[in-house]
Image 1 (cartoon, rainbow, N blue to C red):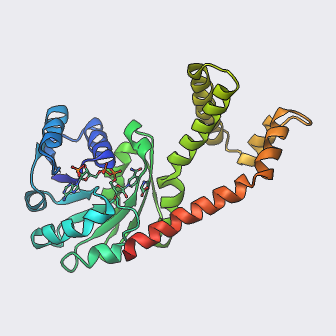
Image 2: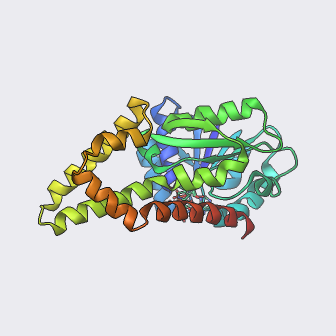
Image 3: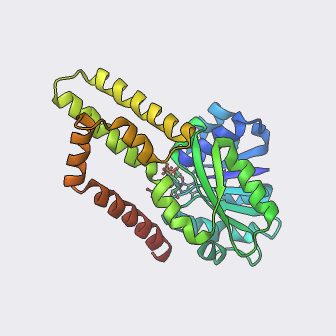
Length: 264
Ligand SMILES: NC(=O)C1=CN([C@@H]2O[C@H](COP(=O)(O)OP(=O)(O)OC[C@H]3O[C@@H](n4cnc5c(N)ncnc54)[C@H](OP(=O)(O)O)[C@@H]3O)[C@@H](O)[C@H]2O)C=CC1
Ligand SMILES: O=C(O)[C@@H]1CCC=N1
């Protein structure tokens, strides 16, 4: 039995993915504090919603998708019901396996995972790393479950804050670029709906090129950049405004914030 504790944006994406990939609703318990949200989830997915302590008693695999700020109190609540036979998978940003383990009985295996919101479309990118009591079978199980919503990569935990900054937060960077490009088109007099379509398909096409061609982004960028042309003029402005440095600083800030979440 699997329990998803915290079915907000990430938790619900994981729930939908599990069911879409053939997990029976009878095999999934969900814990959600708001009664009306719990009722919605029961109606939409046919799953049973239960208090966290019951989820911990009845499920052997717990997928924890609460905010980092709520996670430790939840672990303290469910800890009396957990043993080495459980597997705890946390998707909380920043919280290390050492911190998570310190709120659980000794020996409970913990996997730290970092998915991203394209999981909602089955296009997620998740990285996983194991803690002190995690064996290969636990990582296999985590990979199987998180693989229902996209790709899964195993990384050393020392890289998890960087993963969070790159792929966890990453979709927001692309939405920020998309928003900026759409607004630029609108400012130049283009209908918003046209600008949105141009930007949406350009991002989709660029992503397909990046993924499908196997080329380095520099090579793909050079193919767009005609000598003396429009792209060269645009890229010169991006460099003049320090956009490369701004992006590097932004990713470092996200990495540092992820690190700080374990300390607060
Ligand atoms: N959003 C993202 O892009 C990503 C988020 N994450 C991580 O996923 C986690 C969840 O984020 P996200 O889904 O965005 O946040 P949400 O706020 O959408 O979801 C959190 C959910 O947890 C519920 N909750 C709060 N307290 C409890 C409790 N005691 N027991 C059970 N459920 C509870 C909330 O209910 P209510 O709303 O009623 O309070 C809410 O539905 C975070 O730790 C975040 O770091 C990881 C990768 C990407
Ligand atoms: O912003 C956050 O903290 C979470 C983690 C990665 C994406 N969203």
